[in-house]
Image: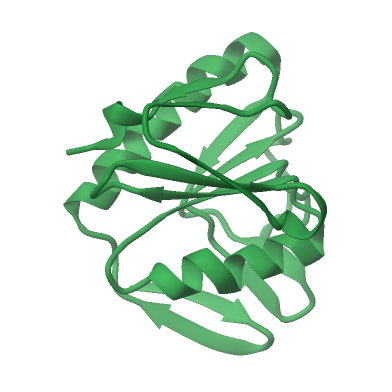
Length: 156
């Protein structure tokens, strides 16, 4: 079970299923390849981030501007520049809406929703993470120079 804290309330959700894990691994691989060239840093769950007092979430994939120190205290308080959530049947509303609002309030630059069943990536960016774009073939994010994601690789 995955446990997160949202406004001091414990949220428990089932562990992800196989298409979720496949999409997560494929996306993390593509992001890591880019991060090594660009000097960024990629982490995958389980890694807790304190987005606000009483709110500790576990994004599926996170990208940071810099490498984190090995002794960085947990939960992390360093805000990622990108948080990615891979949809599972039980997490659609929570990942697409609730977490996006938390990420926006905390100053995260981009919030992606990966749907492994299509496959597609919804990219939320801009002020309050309201601007939305959907990629079904290749995702190019202007805020992450040099990054190109092959969306088809995320399908099981």
